[in-house]
Length: 356
Image 1 (tube, one colour):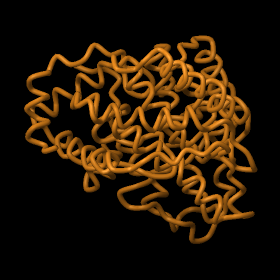
Image 2 (cartoon, rainbow, N blue to C red):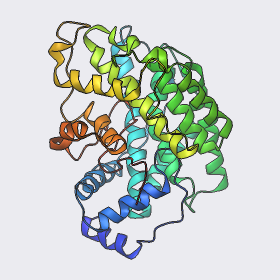
Image 3 (cartoon, rainbow, N blue to C red):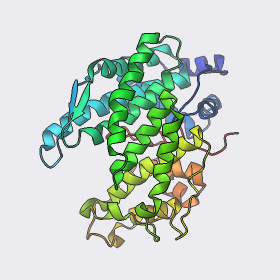
Image 4 (cartoon, rainbow, N blue to C red):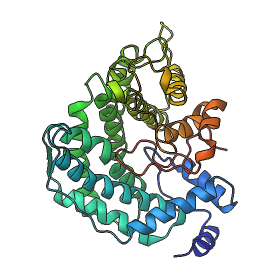
């Protein structure tokens, strides 16, 4: 499929499908991005072409769903940890990329492929196990739930297929989210994001409120007054990474809450002056100056064009912070296609509090 044919199809179908956008990608965002692509506006156009490259590649792959998502601790069995994690991460990203490509292009082959991955996991996967099974299920499975949210109103689903996917989300995926969402570190942050995405799909308004309560309940614990994150900086050489790995799901969860419930947590500030903006600024500064990281000598630095560039691309859209834009501008278009899925397509699907 050529980009020219997709562009023509977009033009003919510019009104778009009457599909309810949920979770990470509300309908107003999808309509806004489709308009930018039709206008061939950058960086949206290049980001769209980048998405299609990944989606087209996914068309040639088959699902690898596991009945038991068995993930031992990394320091116990690194090989099995990587192998089984990668199975879910690959399938989840492919489903997400195809689902998003479908919503922007309206080409049915992308929807059909995304559904193949979703139904494979819904039919096959019955549980998760071992030390890291719940955590990896949650932070990698976000992409599967995003794909389901993007596709659930597609007319080609049967009622049984919809029920099957929703049952897997409710009985397997969300179970893992609820198990870890009360932890004190990034496990909780991923659990809450996953639970919010699940609640969006399952239309569980009470669980959306509960996850919002949890996020607000320990803001004072997670972020220090100077912006560092006490639970994450203790991770020795990987302290900068874990700070990002906590802020990515926290900010994505705040975005979902804004769409689903209307509450804006991005401007939250505790009586002590602790704020999400301070934590982001702290991460940005030390991503640019890792040698000044006081928590560990010679910490592992960020990956250029990957993390935390994807986070700051998204946060530039929400906070209109020039320093965030300057940090990422040479790395656009940004896609994060591996390991975890909070801000996966931040250039193409940049979040904005208000869409024209």
